Length: 196
Image (cartoon, rainbow, N blue to C red; front, side, top):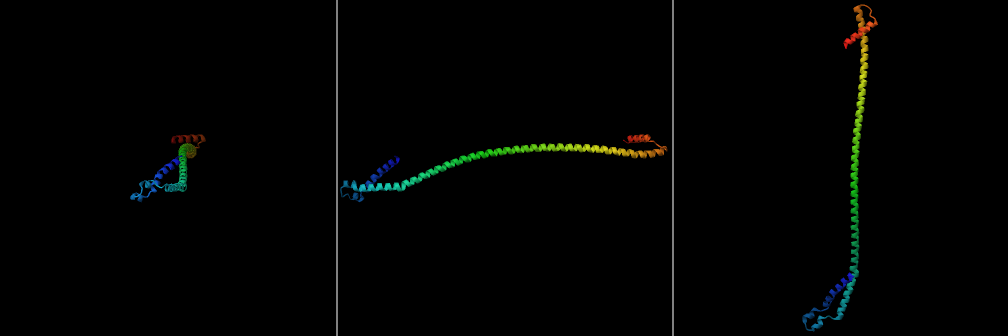
């Protein structure tokens, strides 16, 4: 309907122009003939020009206007489709960005938890190793003390034997008599107690 109105308006504009184009300007300049005949064009000339104009409009419409309009409509649809696809891609990109951000935050949180757990395990292992080392050191100290005590006892026993034999020899010389075992043990104990 809108197209028909546009075509009608265009025809109404062109009709007076075609009416004026059928007149010859030289006739107006000479003014020798009847002015009334020259102002109104010849009906047959007018009809021929009008029909030629209608044919020209039909040809332009068929060969130019419709293909161009068809091309522009296709182009418009293509652009609309591309805009929709771009919007869709943009929304998908935003959704992917959001999910990626969430995944990165979750991975960061997991990494923090893993680091925290690793630190706790390292501290626990450190304390365990220190406790074990302390226990081993205590055991070594206890073993060393026992060994020292054993060596001390052996040394005292050997010293007692040595001193006993020296004391017996001395006492034999001093007393010039034979000393029995009880006397010998008493002398050795007295000597050792004095040495301490």
